[in-house]
Length: 219
Image (cartoon, rainbow, N blue to C red; front, side):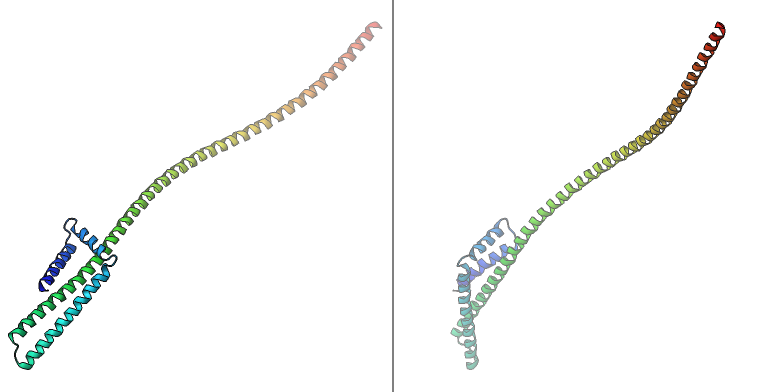
């Protein structure tokens, strides 16, 4: 029994050591083995073994107490009682350490698994963050490009507006010149009509004078 407990204690110590210190892939191997142990009927088996050991531990403690009480009554313990007392004490100590190490290993495995999951989540979050930063950079580049295009379009629009204003000004000047020309043409037409009337009057007077001259010549 004691040799078996020492063997179990050695195995648990090795497992705890490998969980504490990372030596190549051994930690991952131990964690995977414990994961498999906690699957299926593993937990029930472990609880059964732990319960049995607890009962044996309690029995050893009771035996230790009985031997001590017997020795206290007799004033001394016989060599056989001393051997039994030391054997029960050793077994109880080993069982207590084995149970304690088993609990420690269980908690270490639990928290290491949580830590691995958290690291996985952190790695995934880092990837997502890098992706978001990349998208943000791309959006910023697109925004800068769009701003440049908008600025260029605004400059074009401003240039077109200036040209339009200049064209409107030239159009107004041409309209003004056209109105002036039309007024001048109207005035010239009026003068031409007056000159034609005057010319007709002079022709009529000339014909009258010619008629008078011819009449006087005949008489």
